[in-house]
Image (cartoon, rainbow, N blue to C red):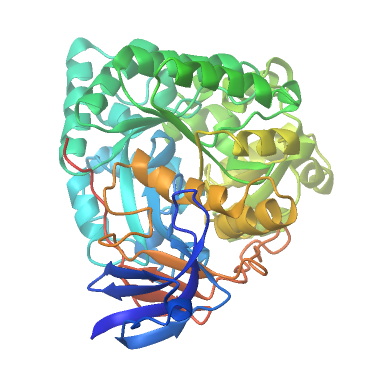
Length: 536
């Protein structure tokens, strides 16, 4: 007898083709048989140790979150319902150029401080790894869902060069090439950058091109958070297209949005740029989340010159009144590069989380509202938070445009990614709601995508980008990473007011053929493992 037969499911298989009714048999963590229209045909139906009646439910491949910030959450929280309950069976970590491998003792502490707002400082984590391979081995001890890893270019630069705003020496560039190659050999699927975050933003295009040549030689891809999503966004996208063309490297554009007032209604210009590149032969994909606000740390808004040298240097500059005034001028008047070249509008910056609980009264307020509470100028409040919270404050940026979100969502290179930050008292609801929000509001209610189109963008297309030969489709022989959802009721529970509410209409999720969500509840199964780069 096989392990499981899922009876009478409406299979949306990830190919984009119309759905069909079938019995799907799972054994040993793989799909071993698909019997189409079994009940109607009156044929011999497969038997199994367990049968699941899936009448009225859609069976699809598990969703792949192409942009996740669960690097520590997967280790800290075995439950991880934030993603498992959405039907996510694979997350891509190491995003935006900053994560926890490869490191040495020095850079590990620096990175932990720099991205406290993304992942927490990690006091509850035993950092018993330093290399990419060791981090992946740590994931292999058992996690809620599967995970792939991108080598973070900013962390590599911190290790080889430091946090200074300068060009790398030839020897340092060779060291960075070596670190990238080692990470790919150990199983990373590509390279990420955060080109509005230090120290990755200090890398010139020539340096990035050289690293991308290494990535291409291993069959990986480059995933940049590029240099601007505001003023100069189109130029920043074009820069990445040209850079990867020169390097011969596949390109995946992270959280591909067009934000801030300067880009309202300009998504068609971006899509035209991408279509020209695709028509010329570019290997190009992108991911988006189906919301308008963005999310990052308050420190990320600072100008690059103020962030040089690492977190301690940043705090020292903010503590000096004259230097802090220079920072304010760049933010409020010039438009800091950390704020995408657009003068900051404090009424759009909502405080979503703090590292220091004593600052909790500011969570849920904009910086402008918090400043009124403190009876001072907004910059004074922002500076107070940065210093008192030691750069650990997270924010929402209410700067997006719905028409841009929908236009980019329809593009032929589109995939889904949550960009979900799980830290803070009121995180962005995308961390808990991205995938059901696609299926409910954007498919069922608005018809922006058909169900088959949407599932393909959340499964097969990202699996192809990751070069995974046995994931992303409901096919015999493929991994049994599967989700069953009710297309009539699937919806996000998370809202901006209650961002940690779990979705509805997703009663079953399997990872490696084992139920991680059963009857709508999280089981104790830890079937997830690292998913490593397929050798060229």
